[in-house]
Length: 267
Image 1 (cartoon, rainbow, N blue to C red):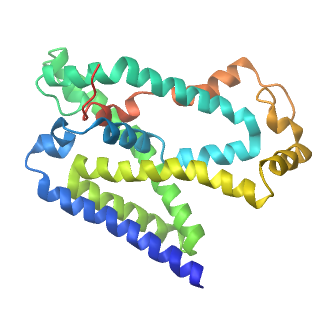
Image 2 (cartoon, helix red, strand yellow):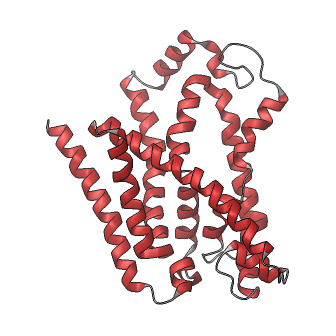
Image 3 (cartoon, rainbow, N blue to C red):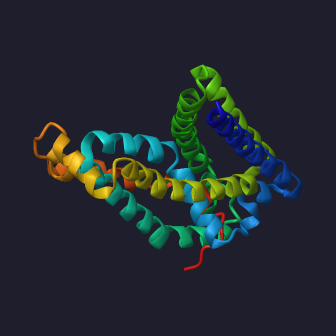
């Protein structure tokens, strides 16, 4: 009972903090540039951690670990793709896009940037990307809300639909109220929490099994193929196409362009 109460208090405090950040930055927002891009004054730490927290949310902490639990090191190809894709985005795209959005009429969104950059008077370069963003970001954000719902359902025993409304409601509140500044700061906090969670959870799990040596032995006894990145869970050999398919998870840039070019990125 005491542990349940501590968990509930921690989540209430967390959600309250996120919403308070939204209210605080609502008072700091003075124009559209502040609301959409934080007036381009974010530092490197906030920019990078908030970008990655947005990009690697529920699927990173719930979906990929679930797949790794079933597939073993076969899931490591996803990590390779994520690392390469993230590095390529920051190395070749982020800084240039950050600079050129200012040169292209101080564009606040990607559709506006494309229209201004190529001097499109037909509005197609604004409308078509906006439609794609609308469609695919609805799917992406929906998956995040489902993850939040699953979490609240598991931890608190809430009805799944109620859990989704609770998680989505808090996110929508601080996003609409505080804009980009609030989203970036809350994502920064979430990114720090995700970083330590990724380190602590497997460490604690291994310690509960007697240490890393005992954990490795238990996994080998259960299924030795779990430690072979070239074998699938059923024991068959993974094909080159399947490896590329897994790595392709990391080769996507559009999911967080809007966040990357909002910060102070030099290069």
